Length: 297
Image 1 (spheres, rainbow, N blue to C red):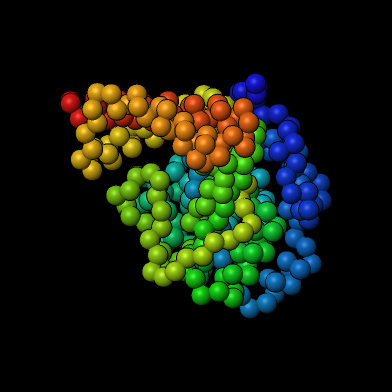
Image 2: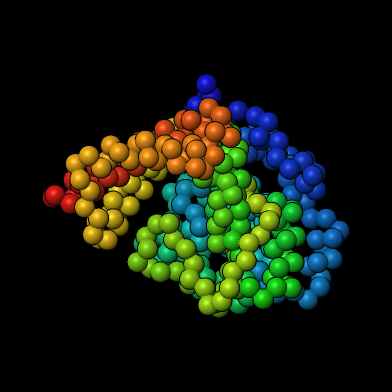
């Protein structure tokens, strides 16, 4: 049974040792190679290419912000849009060389729209969360597609690390996120508070190289986020007119466990797959119990 609440140096943490690296940096999983610009990167930057700004949305991300910025040195500009953090996020970001702008947080969609506006005059924006890292392979692929392809948006796969384990299935791989956007062709629906997704004026493609995402590190963090998500999702279902029967929350448990563990191949993640299928099935029940409660309130 995995040890939870810790961040062990597992085999999964030895990610992509092909990195161009000098020295090491600290990460939630131990020592990982740092990104160092190679000769090819420098040649790429001297060529006439579309300008790209990497954007990081933050709130109290002092633990992650420096390493995240280090992984984005290949971008033309790094912009941190901060929601008035109370820790050292802002000072650390500025020390690392990023531009910092502060914007009051309403929801994720409005925050991303503000970031798109603040990223002008860059032609492209690459959104990265503070707990994510871009690899040199991803950097090269991003540079290539924005220079050569006609798509106005790109979905990026993610390697999710949960409780120190790199997920191989269970719905957390490939976990594509629409993060690379042509700035004048993208916007977010401000009424969608979470699980936001860009609206594009044009076609989108899929990248092959993944972001590295240090997702849930402890059970406490997992529970806290799922409680927020279930409250929001129950409200969405209510507005959609969903009215569950008394037994519906409990039928969701076997249904959702089967989906995570069998349909989405959670068995490939071993004990982590069992654990996370069980946790997600439990919170599916919680979501429908909340829906019944607010629906009868």
